[in-house]
Length: 125
Image (cartoon, rainbow, N blue to C red; front, side, top):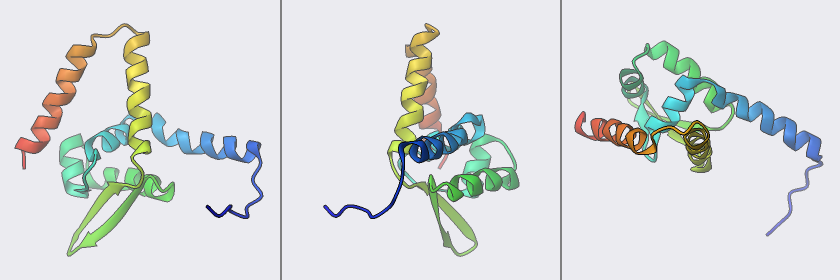
């Protein structure tokens, strides 16, 4: 494997990571990541599911695209988005599991709710 010829300090890395993680402090962006899961969705599908305007979703997607969390492709008039790296979905999922444990929340009920939402996505198509 070839090493990258980039001068990057640990301070640079942690600063970049902190800036990157700030993307995840918004509930709408976390919902977008969860909804995208492992398949691409159109802006209108995301907006309908989350329950906010397409312009609001587009603003969040632009921020996420600028940070390379999502990628887009255009097909006719529709723009589709997908997650660029599965770790960007796994990270928030791990934090969610930690929150469930720390706050002693009903993990089974939450998993059922998430599964019901996932089922709603599939059935709604």
